[in-house]
Length: 110
Image (cartoon, rainbow, N blue to C red):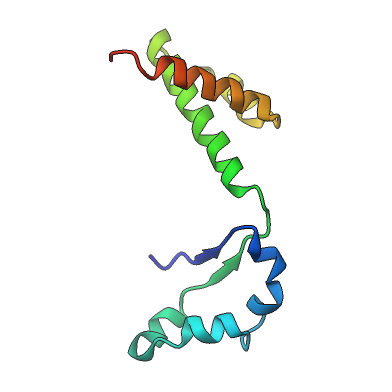
C-alpha cells in the first residue's frame, strides 16, 4: 500500500503547477492528515502525464484476454517471441481485433 499515489487523467498535465513541489497546494492538502500525516508523508506521489493511459490499459487487457483465449483453444501457450511481437505492436488495430475476438468468443461455454 506504500508503493505510491499515482495522479492520472486528462487534468493532471494541465494542473502540474498545483502538483509540483513540496509547498504545492495539492501536496500540502495530501499530507495534512492529522495523526496520519507521518504515514501519508512517506507515500510518494507521482504525476502521470500521458493522456491515453486508460486506452493503453484497455489495449493491454484486451490483448492479454485474446492470448488467453488463444492458448485455451490451442492447448498450448504462444511462443514468447510471438507474444512479445503482439504486445510490442503499437497500433490500435490490434486492440480492436482483440476486443472483437473477446466479444465474439466471450459468450461461449467453458
